[in-house]
Length: 208
Image 1: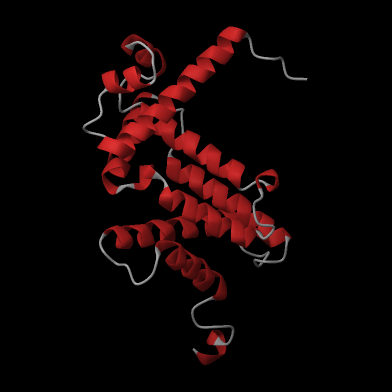
Image 2: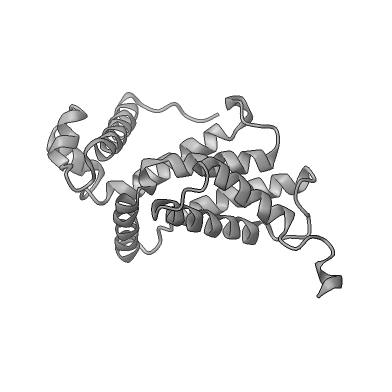
């Protein structure tokens, strides 16, 4: 049985969570560059020094935000949260949830990427890149889809998860560049269908 957290540890977790939630809200409302550490601390009802007890800089909170948001998506994909029974449907749901996240805003995504690269320079043992986390989440769902007979079992789940992630971000970039032939969730749905259905169909080897 896991040991229950002490009151002090629970308070630390609550404070960190409040800082994450507050920072994300302010980044969404007024932009990353316009948001200061002082504003985050004030809105979270903590002292400015308390912020630095958890995050060395404003930039350092971004990788923590990405990790927290990915954990939230993983929870949504679990059966107790009413996730679809179909693993492929869960893959589509996961991509839509990531696409709706404030952290994929182009400017904020650039700041996140720079913060992750800086973190890896100072902490090379920490491999918390959000792209890797998304790949692993997709690979897990692919593996479950293979067990359910929805995806071919002879494919490498990690590789297919990586392909899905790459196509997802390409679609997202096109969307932010003004390519809006359909609502974004529909485009992501079509993307997954096209990948799983194949482009040429089952007879392409005989035709080529």
